[in-house]
Length: 141
Image (cartoon, rainbow, N blue to C red; front, side, top):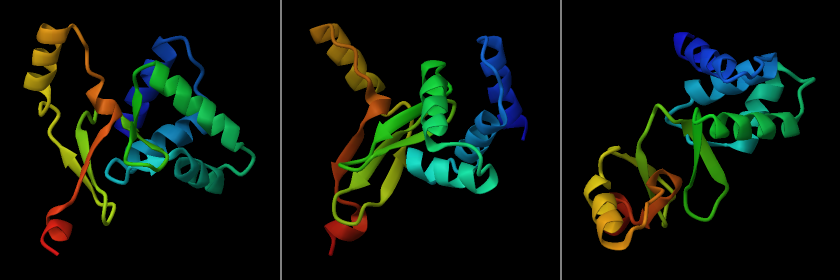
């Protein structure tokens, strides 16, 4: 719960209110760090415990948390965006055959991003996308 409290302290520092729904959203995202949950999946878990909340509130909270740099969304292939805490900075590769998601080290693109910036004046937003390909199991099948 320390992590959740730390995140909510950042919300307060930015002038935001901490509601029971906001606490629930942060708790779900924090406790499912390896699950790559969609907004709908997050809402489902929140609404299970807070049935008076609304899915649109969960979406607004995710948007607010992203604007504050607390959560990030990533596109894993052609499906809906998934969310994770920004402090859990990592990249993703997704298998186009079976859908498995592989977490990649946060510094993986540093050299490529620096070169693209130096050569082309273009700043990459690498946490926003996932590499597509085939996992080891599917590639050898």
